Image 1 (cartoon, rainbow, N blue to C red):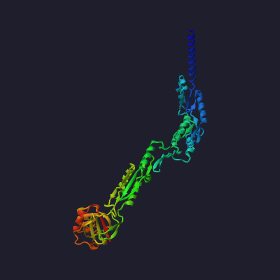
Image 2 (image 1 turned 135 degrees about the vertical axis):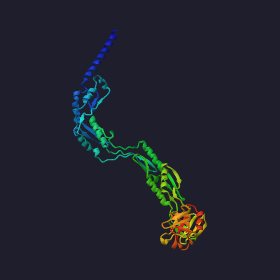
Image 3 (image 1 turned 90 degrees about the vertical axis):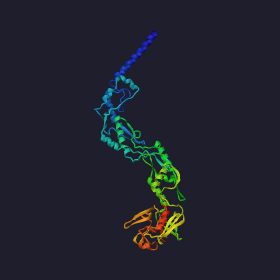
Image 4 (image 1 turned 30 degrees about the horizontal axis):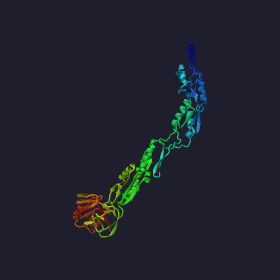
Length: 457
């Protein structure tokens, strides 16, 4: 029993001593700051409340903010340069009241950091001038650039982004003022996001998506078939039509695609080209001009080609045509056509190589500027019973077969003679006037699109 009493007495003594120390410390912290206490970044741990002003003034007199650039170079902003001073009318007394002396033991394990927004004052003009003079704002600017893409060996590869050194002045101003007011001595411009940085980097998820789309587009292969000839379009050309915008979206240059399609038309369209033609009388002549032939529909083919590219298609096809000839071979006229010899004022109509109608006609009056247009045309449509109206005429016809605007083949029942040199004196306004029987025979056998060849010997 004696030993237990002795042990109990020791415990009570230790508890009393601990309580005494705790109470003594609590009394100490009535006018002192706790362990690990900082006000606006200035360490005031265990310092008397009355000493804090001198500590803060010492901080101000020694204050020097180190501004560190992305390349590691540094410069400074000192308290003296910006006329930094201690604000006598501050609210630090509120911080003193926050601390409860009996709660001091918690500060052994947890830091106490306080901020008084009115603790430090400085000249805003001086600070503005000092910031404006910083080297980081006055060096040669390297602009930030997003990740980009390069086409090489048939595929696209990303090129690493450029961070550059362009400072965001608003962010810099805010970061510097925050450091000063919070008593921080170092400002890392990169860590504080004071630079304008690229939005899309090599590791951004959008980068892989854009790369995949670019490679899909250049995998396109379109083989055009032109009357036995082939023209292939592939990535080596398509890549020149692609670009990536600031949002890393792939843009296909529609104008460039349209220029390519126009180039195909220039190379392969046959409307109006000179054609060798064997006449009924056995002569081989060259017929130029007219509206007959193959012609690519530039607008529709451009749309189709853009769709091919967007789907990365591999395909072989004809282009979309605005109009087609009846044949792809030779002069493209084939074996069904109307032949009009203006010199001899005679017309022949062949169908599948067999002549089914012929006869004398009267064409446009050249002496009045109404010559029938020469060249190879095609029948636009045919109409039974029509009224032809011009500036100085109106005529009823039974069979109307236009091939160039308001110029066409039709019967002319008001005429009693055809052929010879009638056209030079009393020719038409450009149409091909035919006897009723001949116009009817042609009308009943001709189809839309049939070539009509007008020539002089």
